[in-house]
Image 1 (cartoon, each protein chain N blue to C red):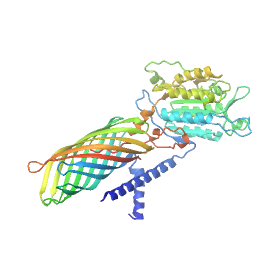
Image 2: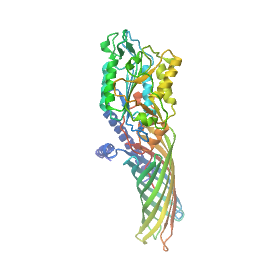
Image 3: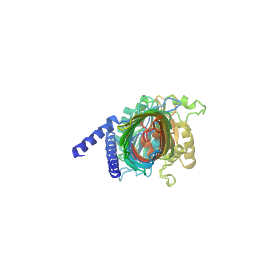
Image 4: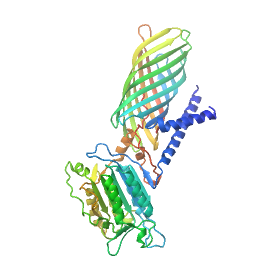
Length: 340
Length: 224
């Protein structure tokens, strides 16, 4: 065999492998074609001081509303949602993230239903909403306004009580549930719940203690008030700007919602005329637990990936969630085979 | 290869991708080898390899590698053609995410054709058990450097129609360093440099055999 023929054989090997790999990827992607965009990320189940299931999220961002209607288009909600989704996936180990952009009522409620069918008993579930909110004049009923919401026709909105019911259904099935709502009047979601973050005892056993108790928490961008859209042309609302800022700059391996909320509430209140609120969802089975964000740094992810312990999706730190496809968990090495 | 055979191979690979190769990484590699046997002078060759590593558990892996090369070498005293096939089988245990310890079996089959009147052709079958370790470090997003060290015992049998059979014992050490870069989510390319030394003692009636290889490799890997 000459070098020329060896090179030709090599080229054939590579081409065949690449074609097979591409076909395989397409096949895997098509198997996971579901509503919205789902993708899986690195797992953070190793070495935790408490029982920790999967991290799942439904992230909703609505910029576009019906033309000519009373709900004007927003500037930052979709970007807020995309950034939060990307951050949770790449740095906080959320394996199952559904991102909905400019979603209608049916789509949002469908995503809740899909999520409630997927959750497992020890999972950590986060729901994030950025978009218009509405509070009736008598302040008795609050709403999320989906992209297909029509003027003041509240039958086309999503009632806060419906959101709470959906969260309740999920919370009954899992350990930790957190609703983050970045919309006007989102504090009305907390009505009847205990206001204010929990007392934080930063002792050694804090995370074990609160991580093992059930939590159903709500973190709202404001009380019963209007909230700003584009904070200092950052492309984010002030609430999500500081939420993302805190999560990005967090250097702790674990951070509870109460810890996170304390800083965000101060930062938002100090800079804009709104005050976020954090508390629990009343009647949903909260046991004074805490939703805990577990940081998985990019470098840690890479080590896990090259060690073959994790999913490769985390290697590509996707800023645009649209380019990310659903992948199944993989356990294999990423290095060439060992030879003596 | 006719179209039917190509289609068959493609279908077979596709099925393997989904069923047999789950949780398996496969790499193809090409290595340029510079070889100094101490007896036969310098030679070089282009080798082709196929390897795979299957994760049985997050800690336990099984890997297999195959390399082949056929090349000519010549010196003032000797002209020879070598046909070489290497097989490596190993079980690895990952003590930490970055460090993996391997034990395994190595087999090298070399068929020689020479211009020596007394030994026109002979074959050398060398095999043995080995132990090795590899470690990697992520140095930049999507990039990791790795190093490997292996040692194996060798039991060699040289069969020649003219001179009969010689048997020898020896050992081999290898050290390898490389860089892997992720070009797609599940696909990587790598470059590597490997230096390997082998010594076999065939006893009083034969010459000890020593060799030093330097291999410059490129690889393409895919994780299924």
